[in-house]
Length: 334
Image (cartoon, rainbow, N blue to C red; front, side, top):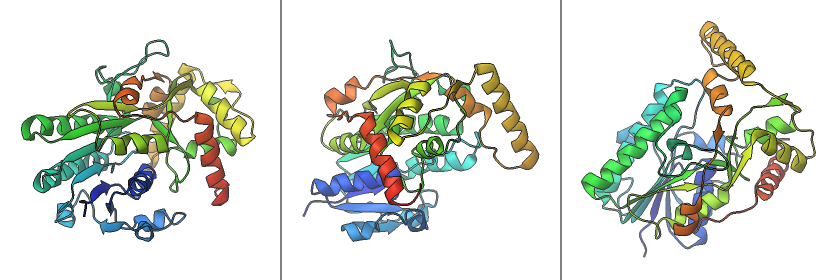
């Protein structure tokens, strides 16, 4: 019998799609979920009902991981804390860097044949629409002061260090902004709900790259047998300004798009006001100055390398939006 693939973060938005893609291809799957994760994903069928071996553990608690990777042939490490508010958060470092170090040691002990690390495109330098960033652009996110970006860059470096020092057979994949069905928490698809509920009065001046979550899952599973050791691959699709993206999303959901651009000075002022509110109350405000700074930049990327070497599909963004919105409606989010 083929050795199972261990998937960390299996209860998350991407993790669920990874598990489904692995099962579709006939892999045996061992899924790691955090304690209490089932309550968060009550809108989805339990992983155990899919024929998956479910293990419960916390990457920040090494004692809970003993024997987790024993007998596994490969690991897909998708677990992370993708939290940007507050901008500085030690728990983000503990999960993203400390958790990655814990899984790397599991991989070394189990002598896996392949380790696929799921990062983020934000660990590379972004570019313009005409000259998008790629895997060779040096990290530019330190300007924002976001522990999420900084910790993911540090974790990426730690995986590359393991490739060099341990000869770990690792391939690194770095998704852009994922949309699609099954976002039960919700995470990135919460943007669609905010647009549908007319909670966004304007649009920032920047932009980003968007991708269907299922395309990310396909390319990530492809990385179990494709791609080069120690190489990174940006998994994305379409570069759009926020005005273009919000307009497309609103049209697909049958609502009005935000009408007004948010000038950079106003965005900075609002971000500073949110920071002040957070300091006074001791709780994060709706946004923070780091988030506003990110939204003012164009985080555009090229995905040609992943298309060529990992067979990254390119599903139309309209389909991702439609599937996500229908899933929200079917599960009474709207």
